[in-house]
Length: 213
Image (cartoon, rainbow, N blue to C red):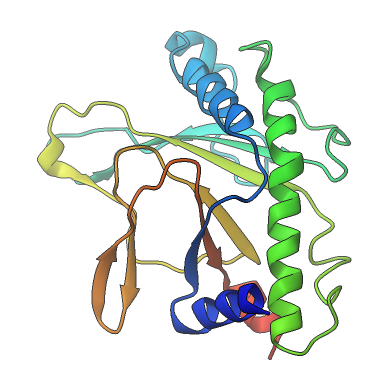
């Protein structure tokens, strides 16, 4: 009951909270971070084969580092991967390198998806809804992973973080790096989100809000 109330209260008040002791192993998180870092260290010509500006393409690399002096840019590369449910059930193309990328990502996604589903169940119970309210079409699709990489910028004063926004999806689980940067808007103020090792920052999105009204 205490956990249900905490999830419900945090969701109503902020829409954000952090989860620790969630069951995703430190090893799975470490391997995930390592293999993604290895991908971004690949030579540019190897990564270019996976690059696409097609927003309908589920698995792709895209960038906002096209830099012209005087123009502010969102200075990041993003590797987007769609993992089928059940994990492994996907026809999407994956990068050829690193060789262990898909194996490691799918081992990370399976328990992480379980955390998300458990949080949704707790939220439903806290609101008096049936525990499986969100199961089915709303949660039966691909799990989308965005791996953001922020390369060094020759003019840091002209770089931008992401603008204020709300996620459009049902639920987001964010694994922060050791470098803080995430902020949450609360009653007109921007609050820094502490980077807690191996914790997930949970964000309830627009789809969830629309689904329970």
